[in-house]
Length: 109
Image (cartoon, rainbow, N blue to C red; front, side, top):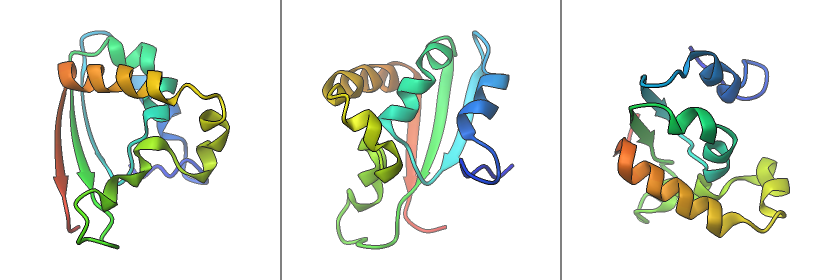
């Protein structure tokens, strides 16, 4: 299923339907944002584990972090950035990822 948070459905809405306590989640995505974590925090904290495969943006592939600029959100998440709680959310997300996630990155599709 391809979700784009626009015409083809919202990722968060679809995940909420399926995340139950003790379940495992496997996701392939080109984007991951701490604000996405924040909006699904309750559901994500109840799962047993996450396998996340991130595809890096091929633009600026010389920079090893170039594909992960979306961690702090994009222009659509500006309203969340304006709440000035980015550090708190980032710490909470980092702790959750450390305890429950297995993350891999690929540089080509």
